[in-house]
Length: 196
Ligand code: HEM
Image 1: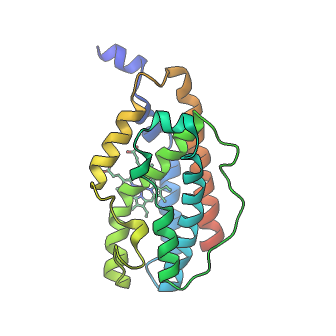
Image 2: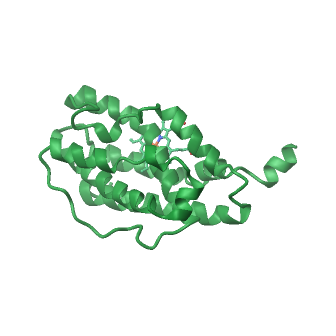
């Protein structure tokens, strides 16, 4: 059975392993941008989050994505990011839609990056509260947990990834989608924070 597992690693495990360097880069960019050092720096982070969430929620409209992930209605932080920008008195940034040409199966990789980021956001949320006094009701809605809780919603997403409906032959494209999504968030953080 061990052999079978090695021959056919689960998609979620491959995603985590094969995009690990990208996740590390996010840490570096965040450290460099120090978003909790001032409300201004934090506002730059929320602008990046807003544009990334706009890319992500564009994919929610795709019927094939809806079929692959049946609970999209509980996911996404576009509305929260927009409300945070309003709380912060910031302008809504304008940019191209980076996901305009993204379809299944790559779209699942994009969703992986967004949904996974809700886990790390637990730490960021605490910092936003402690350092800046923001909350789930003001300024830090985009970092707050989903109502059902981070772990529950994440586990359900992983179950949608590690599902027989997604053939092994699609895994490489999904990982490429995750890399593209990380590249996009990296591009946005660099734009708002500068090159780390
Ligand atoms: C300083 C900022 C960040 C910190 C401290 C952080 C921290 C973490 C931690 C601790 C986990 C693992 C949680 C667990 O296994 O229970 C995690 C997972 C993850 N994070 Fe981050 N993160 C940060 C930024 C980001 C960003 C900006 C993105 C993408 C836009 C991101 C994407 C992900 C993904 C996709 C996962 C899931 C990994 C997996 O299990 O497959 N993270 N993060």
